Length: 186
Image 1 (cartoon, helix red, strand yellow):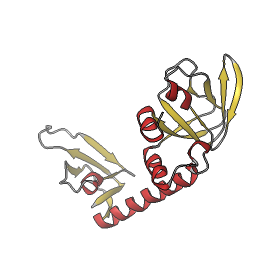
Image 2: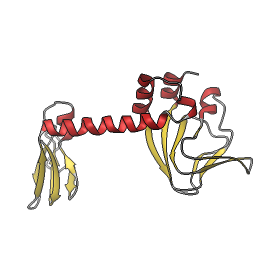
Image 3: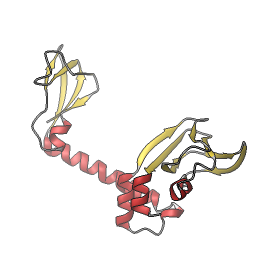
């Protein structure tokens, strides 16, 4: 089972790690997913510190929920990626591979995403929001939803050519250098 703690506090103990808890869970936190995801024995014991109310989800339902959620996330990313100019010619399999490798990131207004002169190790796609590119103190380009940046430094191994700064609250999808080269080539 996967467990969700509605109220109370639970302590986690691992055999061989002494009598002190290695972790504590409080209201709203869940546990037990690793044993279900990897079909492995429980790695720890949990004990309630106070009276608790728990919800439990059986392994089959948990696996179904996780699979459905992962599939929906992948399909949503794939549909979005089809609209990105650089990726529009990729087939379904290639888009799925990229969708699975992308990592989410966010930035508040004013945050520098990349800085001119720094080494470039990440490729960015804007999921939501607006960015501005600044080169030598002058605004040279703006980016909006579906735009991408950071690829030039990955392709050439040159330092970042410009600073890219968030203008609004932004959501990004990122791909590190290794994944970018493996999936999109050089």
